[in-house]
Amino acid sequence: MKKFFIVGLMMLMTSYGLMAQYSLRGTVLNEQNEELVGAVVRLSSKHAVTGIDGSFVIEDIKGGMQRLSVSFLGYETYREEILVEAERQISIVLSPKSMMTSEVTVSALRAKKTDPVAYSELSAEELKQRNFGQDLPYLINMTPGLVVSSDAGAGVGYTSMRLRGSDITRINVTLNGIPLNDSESQNVFWVNMPDLTSSVNQIQVQRGVGTSTNGAASFGGSINISTLNGLSGNQVVVDNAYGSFNTWRNTVQLSTIVPGDKFAFDLRLSNITSDGFIDRGFSDLKSFYLSGGYYGDNTSVRFVTFSGKERSYQAWNGVPKVKLENDSEGMQKLIVMDGWSDEEAVNLLSSGARTFNRYLYDNQTDNYQQDHYQLHFSHRPSHSVLLNAAFH
Image (tube, rainbow, N blue to C red):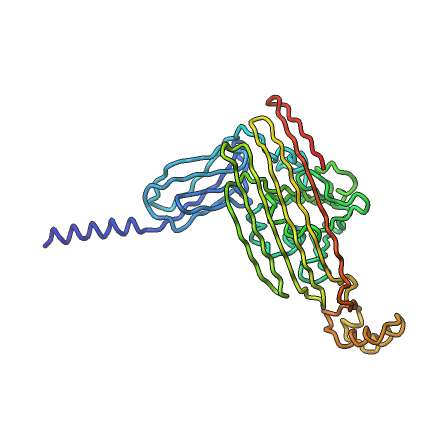
């Protein structure tokens, strides 16, 4: 009986050890001891993505031998068999991969840790957690010194931003190294690029004069955007989100690497609709993104195209001060002095103090479409020479 008791106890302890749950924490670095943001860490059936400080955590891991792999664009994949038997803290160093990627074409515009520039960076994973359909300014609004606003009040449709007090005409915006600022007005119409964030790999926001080489628009700062290129692996993503003011975002995304690891493609289709906070401030936005490229050992060629189409109701006049303060006498004076019609007067007096919109016509909308085409070429004839060319 005693022997059976001991055997049963040992089996129970073994079973407990197998069922025990642990966590794995660590940091992913390059050979220069710099944190790698967005590296994918896989441990058997679980995975995590490194944050802005290069750290990751995988929880609820079963004990025993586990296969660990770490991958990051432009680096050799790290693989190791590890024994999980307690809480572990590890540091992983990735070696550069001998392959040309699109990232080298925009590296000259990005600030490094050693540069005397105030900047913030956001990875694709961080942007994904914030993305519920708003325009890009609302997804980076936690950046120090950045203030954003929305005509319709929901962050969908016409949005604007200021960086350290400078408006968008003094902020240089680049996408894969190509200027996005309008050549005439220096403005950036985010409404014509809906759900662009779903195709963004990383954003760097530089405050004040920084490393941009694209002219006077960088006086107030720079926003450098790099987009996805399909090298993240084979995957299909269907993402639907719903929020306040009947805001919907529907996105379908496809990424694939052709066998041989030389060709990669990324495709996205998006549809965003919102009623807006302001009366009649609705938006109906559609967009697509397509990237395809060849990535050789010393040469890369990449084509990028994206387009956005908007139908947005006019809502940019704001709410008069007398309406905000519920000043009945002041509203009557405004109606008389501005020559408002009877319909407009009734609208002013009966609308909500913060949702008032003077425009009343059913089809008083902006209907625009904006198309972008980019072709990037990079060649490294030797270890110390890199040639880049971009057409748009």
